[in-house]
Length: 91
Image (tube, rainbow, N blue to C red; front, side):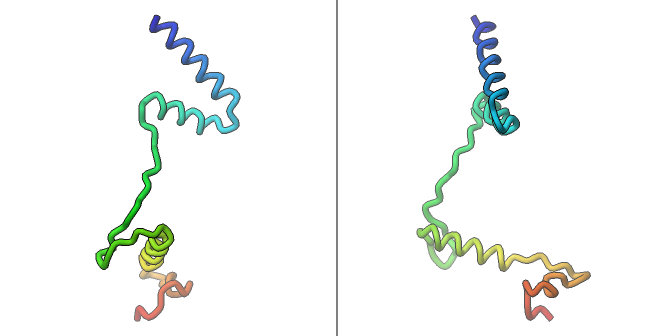
């Protein structure tokens, strides 16, 4: 019985991959499904920034944008960040 189930499953997956427009994506979805590693988006309802909690989604997005804008890797050899105007006043 196990052999029959395995063959049916294999045929089913083969057909899914064949009719798919995104074969690699379909293959990975099959693998995730078979291994039980299905990724689900985790909703974040609040974020702590030390000064207080943020519960509004737009405010969280703004906080992350500010963080990423302030986190700049400065190329000390060419001062490329200074040349692009991303960072000012670092003399």
